[in-house]
Length: 456
Ligand SMILES: Cc1cc2nc3c(=O)[nH]c(=O)nc-3n(C[C@H](O)[C@H](O)[C@H](O)COP(=O)(O)OP(=O)(O)OC[C@H]3O[C@@H](n4cnc5c(N)ncnc54)[C@H](O)[C@@H]3O)c2cc1C
Image (tube, rainbow, N blue to C red; front, side, top):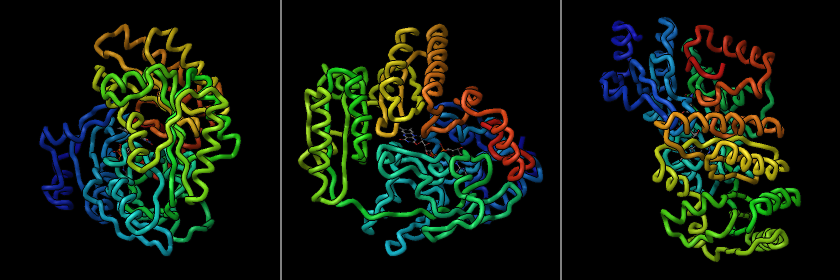
């Protein structure tokens, strides 16, 4: 509960237009894609000082504060499990600097990721991390979840582009971590600790990201295989050969057929699997890289290979990958999108395990994967109102996580833990490591007000 006196104080800090408690507002700020719980109050700060003053008061009253980006999370990360205050960052959304000379950008957390990418490209530089939600998610949410995306196979994830942060501790104290230099080894790396902390340690209020040179050209191939084993073996062979595509995505037959049924894109529905392979770099090198990738596919039994000749054709080849999950949402009552991730060489084994799990639980697993980095996305559609079916899906998910861990993988390659994966943490994290995390949490947040009820 947020006491009435605290509400009044908070209203004095941010003004009544940015301090919301009408039932319809609380409803809007209660959910992400996975879970739902209403807060008691929503504040929308614009300045770091406002963030600091709000946290100080919440800490004094021991009221929970859950930071919120665009709520595109898939695991309940921004859902206020213990109610209290939701701190929505959407109005703290200025791009403060794009600096091609120092190769960096300084932004506020509420900037939409795609807006940063476009601003960088307009200045002739490149911000590579590209979560598929980039047109709606916030860069602050990306930092707090260490978001990835198709291009991360070559360029790395959000963490790899972080130079420094400004963050506010629950006490209201403002800290600055890292800074503007590309090289910086002064002391503990708190920037990286905050990255992926899912709002459990501090509120991120400013972000300095590294930018790189914009690749001159790209080549995109869409390749169809008669067996998913051939497709997944091709992935590990391409990676082992030292070609690093900018994207290497896999789609299985269930996914291809659903996409074709809804959107009629002309996909080969007899294919057991398709790969999107995209290479980039200097104009002189991309054709050579594309040719080598194509030869690997042919050797591995590919029966249909499309190579885009123009940017428009390349975008068209990406269409199935980008809109397939929308087709699944349209055709089903609900869908879970998991992201168990395995070492690259274990992709064929993981694909086989997914097939076994699908048969054992009599469900359909639509497989999508950022295959180049082992990040599998088994998608399962079902009717949550059908208790028996929901129980089968729940057991299948548990077995997917167990399979991933048994193959040396992880519970989550990019979607985060949130509420969804909390019950499975013991599969990956030892009691000793969890104890260490709890102690770290206590140092940042002794009163436990930051996003309580989550993984620590
Ligand atoms: C269609 C779709 C596709 C997706 N594709 C991808 C993908 O390819 N790769 C990927 O990694 N994810 C993907 N996601 C998941 C999601 O978009 C990412 O996790 C994204 O980084 C979340 O950003 P957000 O702004 O929506 O954050 P939210 O969901 O609002 O919050 C996520 C977490 O960040 C914390 N947080 C947010 N802002 C701050 C802040 N300023 N300070 C401290 N903590 C904060 C919240 O407390 C919460 O714990 C996808 C989601 C959808 C719906």
